[in-house]
Length: 383
Ligand SMILES: [Zn+2]
Image (cartoon, rainbow, N blue to C red):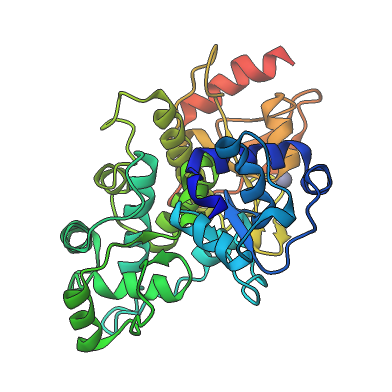
């Protein structure tokens, strides 16, 4: 049939062109009507699958196909694209378009079991996601043989799970599958994520598995989203765990992969946001100068402000003692040296020297006198 010579890179070229022109112009240019139901999902976005396949055909026959030249129906297009490793929705499936927002929403709605002993949330699901995100970050294939998944994930859960937990990597994989994040290609009778029969099913089928294609693409392509997810998982589920060690174990550690500068930047972002996150939580998101806290839909908002600025020429360190939890206004005023903090932790207006009250402190967040001193001597003096 007509589409049989299609290759993956031809489809990706058509997707690029779709992105460049925009949907309306792309469809109009090649004479396609908007798709109903059959959409190709790529990079968290959706594309009219028949139009993409037709335009991709340029790589086979030298010119794009017109919509009336296809021998098969839309289902055929979906099968051809599916064979090339793309995810294509079917009619009735399109209510939920996987996107960055969808991925974040799914990550925020994990439902780990709770330890009856301590009330702590079990870590199987977040560890499974961290393991998969680490693989994506290292450019490893999306799907992994069950034997290897079972072994690697099992070890990770043993090392970083709650003390009383058994590894049982079958359960998080099955749960994430039903949650819409995990792919078990070729299996339609996937059991619920509990009990012996579920473990038996995995043992018999030995399924290849991994993140769903759209989710894998997002965490591969979007460093910022990857960092957000990792920060979210670490801060929600791994209190009292050595985050750096865990990041290192799942391949998200800059130190263990010095070959890639790009990685180093991302993992630095992750660590910085984690640190700031800890400081903000210590103050429950209240500004340490005015006490305000901003309420947003998803919770409270505050900023982690460095007292001695990072980078040249100040070279301030990234450590809790050099961080304050501030509202956006006071963050700017501190950065510009318009307010400064005295050794006795009173906050003063730089211009007038008037006191603005005491800095709000909390016992588990100690502030470095050296950095406050630097701020007074260098940052506030300049302004
Ligand atoms: Zn404030």
